[in-house]
Length: 135
Image (tube, rainbow, N blue to C red; front, side, top):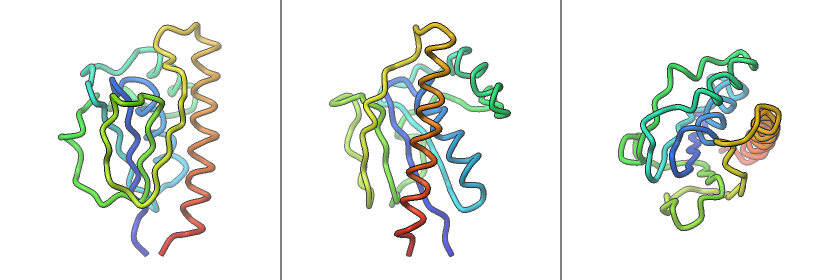
């Protein structure tokens, strides 16, 4: 059985999409190929995101903020945008979702963790849905 291919997209690729990629890797294991990218990447991972994911046992410091041009070509089973609207270009996929999550960049630590936890909840749900329709 082939791996599910999932792409998470936001504007800077420094917070939300990075955490979503990490959770997809954590919870999908070797059944998922996960990437993240930004429409205007910041080239930096937010230290708050690194700290928040460290609390979950994941080292986000090894990730890099990247553009859509730097990810492998599709096809993707799912593309998830993080509420970036027109700033996120269309990437073809079997399934598309927009999670419309607030950018946690400037949030206090507890509010940042709340966004992180919501991302984890949604990633788990996405993986469960995709597993049900997997070819």
